[in-house]
Image (tube, rainbow, N blue to C red; front, side):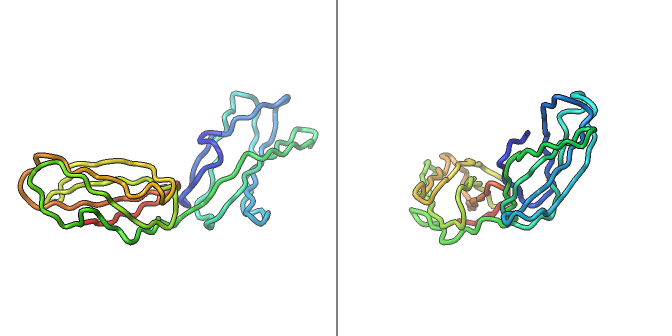
Length: 193
């Protein structure tokens, strides 16, 4: 399947292309989603596949599934009602943005800079890992001056992460924001100073 399973989803509908090999056609494909307790929470199909020209088949993970881990199975049924069930893989629904707390920098913000490049060590606590961290530096009118990242942080042991204030910035006030994005695409932006 493309994207390949396992995958992470933020609760929105997501289409994946399913390709199968079959010794016969036509076949009917039925898709079943099981939650972590083994209960069926969604069934789609049967979809008629007359030949390989109907492949790959676009299957859509429905929107609105509760947060949790799921398994996607596919059952192929031929004209004689013979069936073959295949586990296609797992996916996780995660609708919660990563919680970022205790954001600090060394040297601490706010700070005064003489126009030379300066590296800040940014430390945070996160409710989940891995996360991708992106820094954005804004001028006083809200214009983006520079973006650094995304950088993948797999565990808290990879913190702090560095951000470098670029050299030769015009005189004025600037704001540094950090955006954390989880595997499902949920984001949380924190103003660092």
